Length: 113
Length: 117
Image 1 (tube, chains in turn yellow, cyan):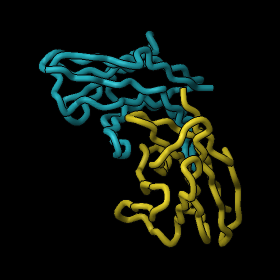
Image 2 (cartoon, rainbow over the protein chains, first blue to last red):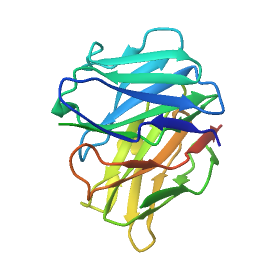
Image 3 (cartoon, chains in turn brown, blue):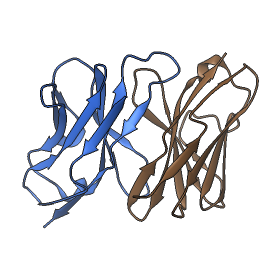
Image 4 (tube, chains in turn purple, blue):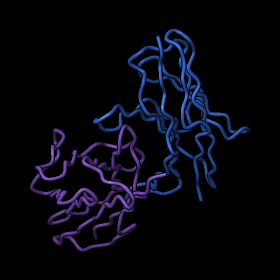
């Protein structure tokens, strides 16, 4: 099946710094990618829908200036957490669509200290 | 280590007939288990979740799933399929042992449900 690679799988950063997470579709082109966040002991929350060549669509309550999404090509979307704070610590996962199917990255565990 | 196996990549049912989507999991610790649905061009929607309370979990849109530890299964069922149920369904396992910074999620490969008239 199709492969979505997410990098890094885990990262620790200091408060106030920025962290970039990459989501790549390795063997297919994805016009739409989704970014999710999981809070501890909770299910996933959709953060934004990323469309190649256009601005991302953010869900209500998600700060677009804090969570910058760039989808510059059909195989790459990036999520940058700017000025990270400890409350941004979470598990972030992306998915990419091809046809009617979605494929998920392996996720990124972010810890802000 | 944890893993999820969705046994059927495609399931086709007639409208009004029961739906069964199978999921087996493997986890070193007591897991949390979820079922998500994704309709084309939309993000995931949570159907239901199991987190160690009742083993029979009722979700939205008439779906339910039963956690069976002895069989390491968490199959999703619905008594009567509707055309709007046609979508892709994902079974997900999370290791509840981990705390802080988010629990690692492992996704099944998905099951496409087709509902025919």
